[in-house]
Amino acid sequence: MNNRFATHDTFVVERVYNTNRDRVFAAWSDPTIKSQWFQKAKEFDFRVGGLETNQGGPPGGPVYRFNARYEEIVPNQRIVYTYTMDMGETRISVSVTTVEFKQEESETRLIFTEQGTFLDGHDSVEAREHGTKIMLDKLGEVLKHESMTEKNQ
Image (cartoon, rainbow, N blue to C red; front, side, top):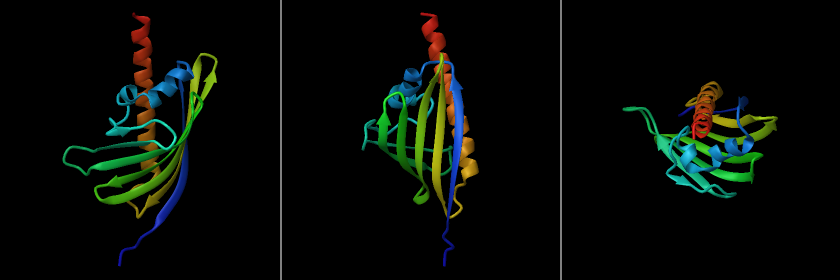
């Protein structure tokens, strides 16, 4: 008999980007920009009720599948989505994520809150938070590069 269990946890990651919130929001809503810092979507329907799916993983390692549904979108202010994460054929987590965009003078504070249910020890809040920090740092590099490219034109 398998020992099945669920661990519930929440984490919050904040980042400040040196650009306006319209640009930061666009990095989430435009599939071309988003694919520069997040796994390229197989399906990307950015609207309430729309789906985003992708899959990938390390060479020779397991394939991870991300299946999200947009629950609320307030342009330039907030995105709420639910998503499942699978490793191969195994469901490893189910989450609700809220991404908030706060304009602070010439900068944008992004507040990423994830409420997760991590299943049967296949994933953990610590691992997910670590990966999210790397992802949001990569977003920062894309925004910085975009800003530098625009200044040089």
